[in-house]
Image (cartoon, rainbow, N blue to C red):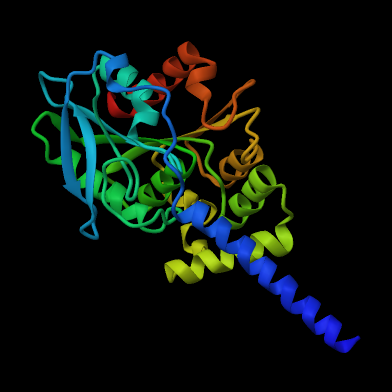
Length: 293
């Protein structure tokens, strides 16, 4: 009986490790996702650009200058497993409204270099590299820089803005408050697995592979530092990946000035697709108030 129990324990641990490894692979090396749009879908005159992340990783992007006098600049920050093309609709309406826009691929995504997605740890260097790039452009008013982020990209935007005051405002759609929350909810949604022991084990393994705790990239710990700069948090009502509660948690933790919008019927990071006219109006109002005083 003792030998049987030991054997079952070994099998259970091996099974848990195998499942955790598969999950960690999906997190660190997500498969390419077919995006909804390409550049051909929009009238966006711009150019391909490359620049360096703060850690030296080469990143690729599109730069859409508004033209004329120096204009406020917007950097777009895509979600986990996605690419810059995810944010082409946002780039289009912001550019048409007279903003200069930079949209880029995070490391290990799209055309950028890098060996893995790091759940916001090293992506912070990437976004700071993007800010470094846009503020030195001659057609950009470096005093007025904003960021739009979706999902993981919105968390990265909040983390970077908390320490980089060149960012004057952030619009964050579907951010999550902490690594534990996203691991728990994502495992339930994608794998139908409970938090214990699977989310705990997968998070532990991801941290071992990255050599750093995911908890240092918890937006809930830094969001208060953005004040007095305004933030706009957007939750999607039908978000099956994270749930709108995550955005509520961050809104409650943030200081004024802040605004919140729950988009009825919208799935995860699909706010523009669900209510494009109202989405554009609200986002432009928020940016205009801060970046075009």
